[in-house]
Every structure is written in structure tokens, then in C-alpha cells.
Length: 445
Image 1 (tube, rainbow, N blue to C red):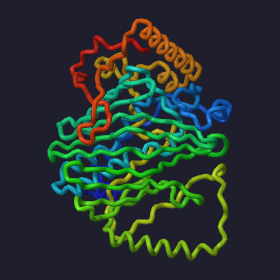
Image 2: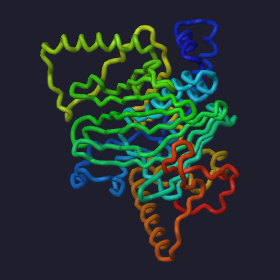
Image 3: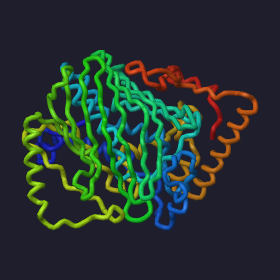
Image 4: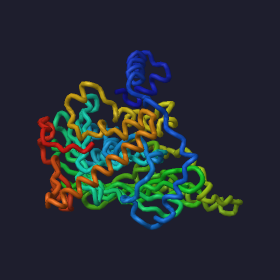
């Protein structure tokens, strides 16, 4: 993969890397950058008729029409955390713990970047559903499993193909409807382990909110504080995902700082979770903020137009780069047809690809084999709806039969236990999955 410097050199016509750039571009185009069918229009469907009785409620038990979905399972959506795995590899190459923290913090932000403009709801995984992804080009393999249905908990475990990192977690997405918006709070600890440095980092993702559910253009924001902790050194990165605010000035912005083990600020981070992250020294950052605040106060006397949230169309100004900043991460451009393909990234478009080679090795519980998701991806909304209903009824019947016989559901690839680094309740990989013996997996489809 081209470095950013090489990429821009190529754009400016530097001959020494042009051939490599062209080869990379052709390879990129040849990869999956489209789905079998474009998404359906939701203009003729009213979500208000479904949600009006659910204000303030937790939505995990509410059945939603398939038209509001995107053709991916939540297990596949979780896999999108791995799109920028190169940041983990970059962290591994550094001998300085602060430099590693910069990369890990950028990875934590990049992990939620694909949610930008993704207003479709992923399919709820069925109990026992799994999803695996092996990416030789990115140097990792991942397995995830739906380990609980009520509450819905999804566990995942990724590892470097060179045994150079382990990335794992369990997510319980609490969804609430607040009248104009749906809020998703992704409860659960995320852990990154770097064996080479004997280090483990933990954090929790920010809250995601989809606005204008009833009327107006749908738009997404992330907000909340994220604390990335290095459990070996005691260093921390404190990140603040800014709420939009009344006039949209803070939309998508992320700001933060890194503390060394003596709790001294060593540098500041800033950027947008939809675009990029930069690092800059603390003195320069604070001077910039003071000047920015003074400029804002000077504008207070000027006339301002009130933006009603209901009709606010977020565009957002491009990020102002502070002189002396260093780029940590920049998002990859989306395919030109992304808006017609559920606003998927190239990485997301490839998640449901199924060829004979993959089909020969995956278990029958893999999300790629779900008939409702496959029907929606192929553009058959009626079949997708019928299959979704059938699968949900099959799952309810199986649960009822277990309750009659006192059989307890047993997860296959994960077990419950304390997180080894902070002691919080977690779901941990039990190993065995990659042995490829799936003779005992349930028939859930």
C-alpha cells in the first residue's frame, strides 16, 4: 500500500512512483466496489408509525421493517473496525510508547469512521451466528459470534497473521429512541494487545446518534469521552468526540491529549472522525485554541441564523490544520457509487462476498449464508422480508424448545470471563475455531 507521501507524489506526476501508483489503482478498482443491486428508496416508508410508541425505550426488542436495514449483519459491521489495521502494524514498529499510543488512538478513532452517513440499520445477528474474515493483504484474521440474544451481545477476536497483535471485545449496543433521534450506546470493552511490547490497551467507543428520524435529512454524529489506557506504562489518551452543537461548528470533531505516566500532557490530538486525525505539541494547540476563541467572541455581535435541528443539513467546514501538526490518519475515499450502495466503504462492500473457496471452509452459521441479507443485497426486498420473519420465528421456536427441556444455550467460540487487563466482565475467545471442525454447530438458518 502506498504511503500518503507517495500517493500525493503520484498525483503530482512524480515518475519514480507513478507506475506503482497505477498498479495500485487498478488493483483497487478490480476489488469489490459495488453490490449486486442498489439500495431501495425509503421515502415511501414512515418510521414514525413504528417508533411513536417507543420514545425513551430500549429498541433491541422492536421488530423493524427490512427496508430500514442495510445488507450486513451487525457482526459484519463490527468487522469494519479492522479497515485501518495498518495503524496497529505502525504502532508495533515503534520503540517509543508515546508514539505507539498515537497510533492506537488514531486506530480507535478510525474504527468508527465507516459509520459516517450509514443510516441503514445492520441486521440483528441470530444467536449462534458467526462471521469470519481473513485478509492476507492487511495481515489479520477475525472471528465473531453472537453470544447472547437478550441482551444482544456480539463478541469478536482478531489476531495478526504474524501473531503480532490481538484485538478483541464484546459489544452490547443499547438503542434508544428520543423522538427525533435514535441513540446507540455501544457498551463493552475493546482491547488491543501488542505482545512484542508486552502491552495492552483498552477503551470504549463513543455514543452514536442518528438524527431527523421523523422528518428532514438523516445525519449521524458521535459524541462522548473515550479513554485509551496503556496498562503496562500507565499512559493515557483522553479523546472527546464533540457533540454537534447548535450551529454545527463542532460537528464530527475529535480533540484530545496524551498523558505520560506522571499525568503530564505530552501532546494534543485533533481532527474529525469522518476524515483525519493530527498530532501537535500542547503549547501550539493551546495557543491556537485561545486565538480561535477570541475570533469566535468577535463574531458574537454579528447576526446569526438559528438552525432548527429538524431541518439542519450537516455539511461541516473542512478541518483547519494547525501549523506544525503531523498527520496520524486519513480516511480512504469511498467508491463513487457509495451513495447508491448504502453509503458503504470499499471495505464494507467486500464483507458479504462469497466465492467457492470461502464457502468451502466457513461454518453454516456464517453471516454470508443468511438468506435475508443475501436477498436484500440482491435487490429482492420481499424475499428479504419473508426470510427475516422466518429466521426470527425459527429462533423463537428454538428458544421455546430449550426452555421446555431445560437445555441451556452454549456458546461455541467464546466464553464469559473477566477482562485480563481491567477485570470488567467480558467475552473471551475459547480458541478452536480455526481448527475448522464445525460438525457441532447449530442449524440457525
